[in-house]
Image 1 (spheres, one colour):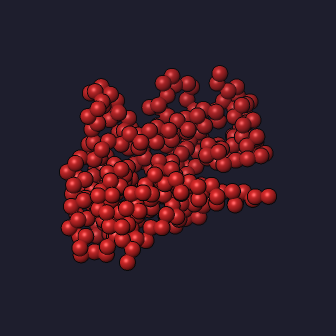
Image 2 (spheres, helix red, strand yellow):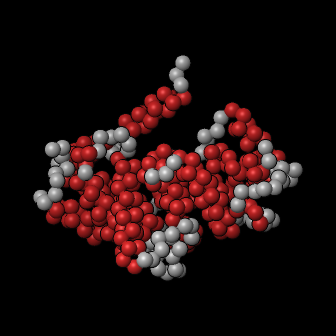
Image 3 (tube, rainbow over the protein chains, first blue to last red):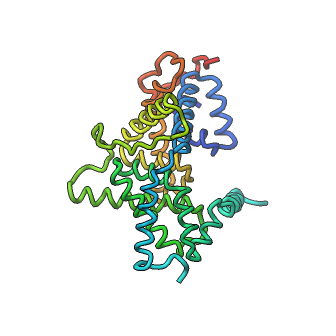
Length: 85
Length: 231
């Protein structure tokens, strides 16, 4: 496996979607190639940063929550009920 | 012998049955508004951030948030638990956000490719009262870097990255929501990941090594496998 072939497979490798020969080849390439190793690791870190950022999303201001619920309550009678008809 | 497809289906069912929102959804479907209020509280921050990433500005994100939860409430009787409630909510939010972008495009003929001017998509400032000022500054700075990075992607790549890597939907769920094929999702995801990696690596590397070759953000044509890996 060369670098181009590895990078084409990198997403699936990151996601754990590879099995068998492609998985072995990706692991082997990473072991040998410093450049692809760095690309792979920083790609993985980038995704992890976005996930941490999303997981740490601060609570919305109470006023916005109240506005959402007020909208729902005020239209509750004029719209289709939530329960099954 | 069980095929991989059957195993995947069974695993999917198990995952869906473990939806942490199931009880609240069932109560809300019986007309319990308090249960729906709890669902809103549970998901509103992430839904707001998703709406903001789609629309590119705080005001539209607030509107999309409201419309998404209102629609979810109206359509709750159509939700039968084939996916997690949150995934269903993401689908509604994406549809609302994209509809809003299309309406704006029709009105102003502004591009929806995601090429925004700096400062036009300033996010709502959500501060965490639990952290101290230094921690908050670092978190704000990192959030700003991430926002700039993802905002620099064009819409097709931004949406796929948002749904796959941030909302953690599957390839199939992402494909369904965006009306794409699974191979198209995979292809866009790979490009988006490489592009973001290229844009953000300078901010993340604590001890930057030698710069990557110019082609590193794209699919490489070369082969550097003779180079020794970092220890």
